[in-house]
Length: 452
Image (cartoon, rainbow, N blue to C red; front, side):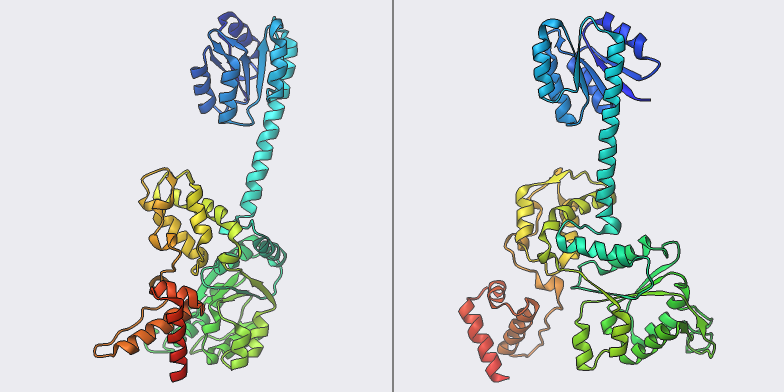
């Protein structure tokens, strides 16, 4: 039932309106602004019927408060004849309509009905807007920048076809998120989705994980186990970091893709499979093919369709929306109540390079929300390295070893070289991170090159 809030200090008018509308609407009454705002804030009111004169209060002041709370509030003004001019002025300021006293109930019923229709239209627009937002944030994908909209467009085109997809991009750009979007939006969504990181599992173990094995196939194989290809039957198998797969295992994978059948370790029996392959890598596979570390025939089998994810530094238009997405996510997880962020918070993140991409941004937001004592995130909630715009190398690369008895010159050389490589061979940034001048780093790099 639609909800009607009637605000009038005349008790008799309230009683007559109650009699007229009680069968059609859920009614709420208020005789002064504070009570009216209480009803409006807690009851999802559809239409407000507001007297322009509320004793010592001005009805327009209440109207402005209602609109501040909800810019789409549908308000009908009740007014005496002498204040028609002010009612017209109110309409110019967003009031839906007005009716003069004494009230013609049939006319008022018609106006209220139209007000309810308008409010329902606002609700539909809001719903469609939310659905559109969800569409652009499906499975965690936030796409406001043109580059990411193109990615979503490609996901939509390939979700229902059987072609293999190779997803490329730097670490932390969301390759698995895109793989899940392809699966869960496509026709295989009701079947299994399995993800396996090819770089995280030793080659001999990866083979058994992918293809399965029979009991006794190797030491410790006490009973048969299906591999990921079999458990992904009719579904999708996501092979992450495919570029790190051992060359021998690459040839076995190629055969499975070509023949659409798998042979478990220790078995001579082949088993037919129906699996869609999605693969991902942060490496340049074409270069790996040229260097002989990745099979060319497998590359073309996997790279039927390529989806490249841009690094966050190339899609900074998405940063505010990613922040909003992560705040919603971690408000649920951390049971926090962060409502917004300050402009300087966003500006600081805009200036940062994000070598760790979206994964790094998510970690920053989670940390800020966990430690913040306010409902708004500000620059004081950011790590110092963000504010100085220096990438924390220890967080994104391997630690640099230092050995007992090693000369300081060798340690210095290794620190400079590792930092230089980690920062994409940028001399200026390397100098800033190491706290030395650009001239010094230039001379040291040149000296190192001459000695090699």
